[in-house]
Image (cartoon, rainbow, N blue to C red):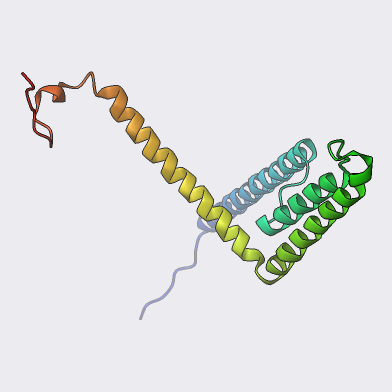
Length: 161
């Protein structure tokens, strides 16, 4: 029947060399991946230190904006109203700030992801508007240089002579 021949020492050594080469390649690939990951982490840390913390979600940013505007409005002293009316003006400002917070906070707590979607939709609208404007500008700037001036357009030419 079929009888397996014992492998020679040279064949076994060749197989062992191939295994060592593969192990070395795997180690080199792993070392390269590790070095890349370390470099990426160091670069992210450097940028964070340089630019500050990354922005939060749209809901968190809106909350910060409302707080900043409220603090600014609360700290304003209006010289227009005079000393007598400044207390009343301050009370009105505080009331407006409280109403704004009361309107924004429940929405932020219930649906924080809505603001992320609104921000994405706003970005998409801005991109569409920019594209439309660029296309129109391109048509305006190429209108005089095209040979289409001789062609009849969608309108009819009327001589007023």
